[in-house]
Image 1 (cartoon, rainbow, N blue to C red):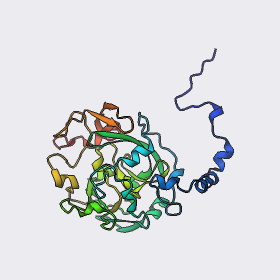
Image 2: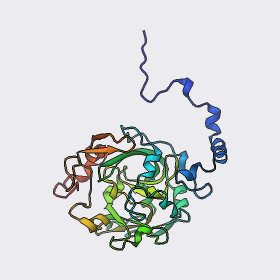
Image 3: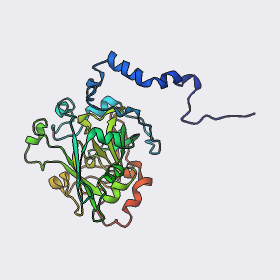
Image 4: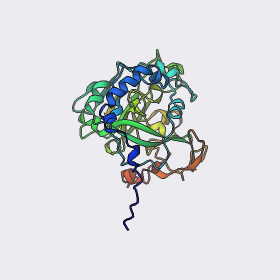
Length: 316
C-alpha cells in the first residue's frame, strides 16, 4: 500500500486558485481598487497613482520565520518613529510625510555618487517578498511581510571603494512634516550604520513594501533598511542618504545613551539591557511572551560575521 504524507506547504487541489484568476490577477486588483477606493488609504498606503505597487514580488522562503505573521493592522499602528513623536500611536500623524517625490542620495567612498529616485530604484532592483521576525530592544516583537531587495544590490549601483568599511544610513529630516524634530535635544537627523561585511550579508534587506503594499510612512516608507538579527533601532527608516565611510559612525542612540545602546546591537537573550531582561519578548497582537532567540533566530546566516570579534560589545 502506497502511503503518501503531504508536505507542510501543500494544500488540497480543490483549494488552489483557478488558473484564469491567476492570469487575470492584475485586472482583478485594478477592479478591487475601483470598488474600494479608501482601502489603501485606511492602512496608510500611498494613494493609487502615487507609487508603483511592489505586491507582485515572489516570496523567498529561505528565511523561515517559524512564527505566525503579525496582523497588518498591528504591525502598522504600533510604531517607534521619534521624528513624529515618542509614543507608539504615530501612524496617523506620519501620513503627513510625502512619499513622492523621494530621492535617495548614495555617496561617500564610492565610485559613483548618485541621487536615485525611489521609483527608479524599485524598477531596477530584484524585488522579492520575505516574512521576517523583528525584535525591538524594548522587548516587543512582530513577524511582518516585507517586499524589497538585498542591500548589497543597491550598493552595487554606487560601487563602494576598497577603503569603505562602514555604511551609514540617514533618515529624512522633514521639519515641515515631522513635528518630533522640534525636540532639539535629540541628535537629528537619525543615523545608523553597519559594517560593509554586514551590508553584504544576504539577510541585510532594503524594504519598499509591507503586506503587498508600498511601505507606509509610519513603518519607514518609502524606503528603509532591515537587519532582522539586530534590535529594531538599527533599522534605519525613511532613508534620505546612504554614505560609505572608513570611519565607524556613532549612531543616534549611541549619542543619547552610549552605555545602553551600542554599535552592533545583535539580539541575545542572555545579555540584558541595563534596565530590563532580554530573555523573552512580547508578540504584538497576542501579547504572548516567548523566548528570545540569539541573533533573533537567524544565527545560521549571520553568526560568522562576528567570529574574532568576541572582545567587541556585540549584544548591547
